[in-house]
Amino acid sequence: MKQRFLSLFLILFISISTYSQSSKPDTRWFDEARFGLFVHFGPYSVLGDGEWVMQNRPIKVKNYKNLQQFFNPQDFDAKEWVKIAKDAGMKYITFTSRHHDGFSNWNTKQSDWNIMNTPHFGRDIMKELADECHKENIKLILYYSLIDWSRTDYQYWTGQTGSGCGRTERGEWADYINFMKAQLTELLTNYGDIAGIWFDGDWDQHPSDSKSHVNSRVDWHYDEIYGLIHKLQPNCMISNNHHKEPIDGEDYQAFERDLPGENKSGYSDGQVAAGHLSLETCETMNATWGYNITDNNFKSEKELIHYLIKASGYGANLLLNVGPMPNGKIQTECVDRLQVMGDWLSKYGHTIYGTTAGFLKPEKWGVSTAKGKITYIHVLDKDLDKIIINIPNIKSAKLLNTDAKLVWKKDKKSNNVIFSFNGNLDDIDTIIEVEIK
Image (cartoon, rainbow, N blue to C red; front, side):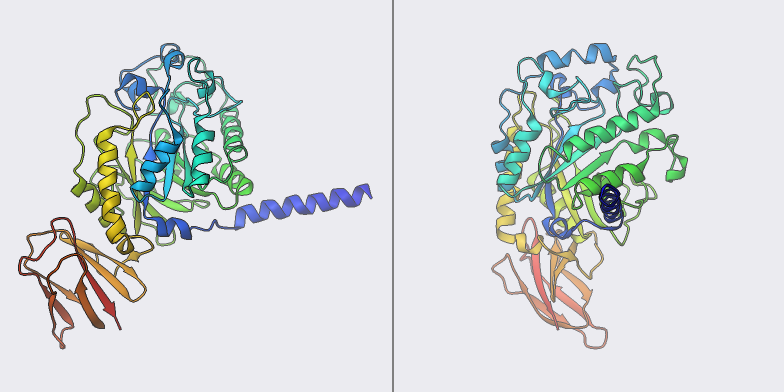
């Protein structure tokens, strides 16, 4: 009987392991979402100089950890954060469980450097946010930094960052891998359904001109880490902001401050959109991710709506960032802009949510999105007189958001369709609904 029990246990264990390695999370909700909220928040917010302040100044670990004594986000309200996201028309939140400074925003047992040991706050932000997201049907994805500027078992001596943080001891890399596994186990065991893990920092262990994973100076043990995640929560998606080609086990591809296929920010040189994965582009609302008290370079509502539309035209989601103030409140400038985006989506969200990239390749003047036999052409240049598009099987076309009647004509020989506007263009986005036969 004992031998039979052990055999059954072994079969069950092998089955679970095989399932976790071979199964793929259901990404349909993600492909339909199109819009999410990125939140960068931690003790760095206190210094008001962005999330890289420890590296940029630089600040030694022993000094930086003093922030734990007066990091007190007393005005943090998970309900308020989630409401802001919902009112903006966002379908998920990606929250920094741990950034490069190594501070954990949850009740971790793996390190004392965490939110529970803040003497004036001492609350588990992760639990409060997770509970509210589950209540309001907002998906929760957890950003997790692979870098740690505070630990000595992170291989900082081969990394590009963290050299000025005052560490001299060199710990064991295997210990660091086990530490990350233990933390990820906590996150995926104690906080209900987690929709995804968003890794960052792989690039720290590559030469600055590296475009391939083979150049990594360390073994990240991704097969073990990805396998663990999918075993603990089979529907938890994985993304890794490594700025390189996706690897096995990743479920959606991240583009930092770039639309897929572009390289305006310099992070995506050589990175192309993988045809088999869902896509996401992340962008700041001003110039920095974490709270910066002097950063007033906020993008306009129009710019932000255009970026959302363009991302959708590439078949990608937009993950738009806020960096809450050290008291836990999201800046008014961010809230106001998000509300305008939500108002626009309440009217025209059907041209964004649940769509795929349209047949029209993105142009300087606009993009297209599609849903079944309906294509939505988004004209973002309000100074155009006309556009010419090859549409062989057009059945009908109309304007969605202006009172004018759309003037269009098809050349039967070339199948080119000429759309004429005669000045009847919306200031933000003129939407043409085209039905295909």
